[in-house]
Image (cartoon, rainbow, N blue to C red; front, side, top):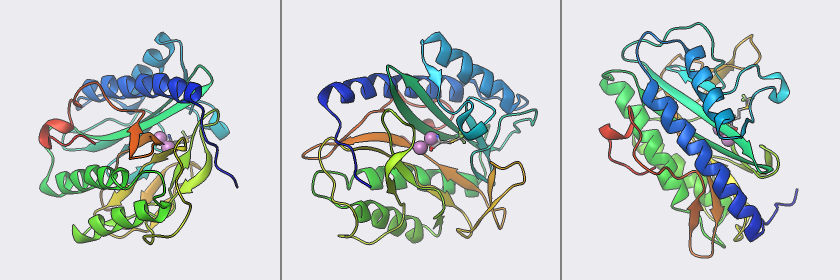
Length: 264
Ligand code: MF3
Ligand code: CO
Ligand code: CO
């Protein structure tokens, strides 16, 4: 399947919606408190998205019932917000996707609720660094396999594993488009990147094994060994000498980055 090359006008629209999604993610993360429910996060994301004149892309997507994915602890991704309460010591990924001006922006981060265990902190910081390491491979003429290889090497060297089943994706006028962006791979293999390609990088890193299970709700993905899992995601556009992060944040994340001081 061919991969779209975005026009400058498309990229400007993607920058606008990417910034919106980033700001909504920052707001939701800063609101996290033990005792609140994941449905409370959904309400915050939904209302902030609508207030900006945007739409939550995930609401109704293949029947997904909420406006945001909230994935706690051993939940790998696609957790459905509901009455479950967030507890002190949890890690939780919030994945925001917004539609504005005809284009989608997709970004997520994993947050700490209260003080994390050393294990929780390890998997979150490794996944933050894996996203940054993957993004650092991107420039015109690099290969998709370079991204996956860099992520896989870092995760392994830190004693963690990479989920195979969930991949990054092209994004634009649809939330999910070609290409698929694997978070494992071989350097020098796969699609050759061209300036103007837009896709997400969203590695999911597990503290234990890479295997996952899909729960009966049809959405929630968990680690098979119930070990902790963490994810960060950005939407990027390939440029001649690197890439631009379209979901770059205007400031640090509350409840996440203060422990690390890393930009990803
Ligand atoms: N934002 C998710 C991604 O990164 C999409 C989840 S689809 C949903 O691709 F329906 F589960 F919301
Ligand atoms: Co995505
Ligand atoms: Co996402």
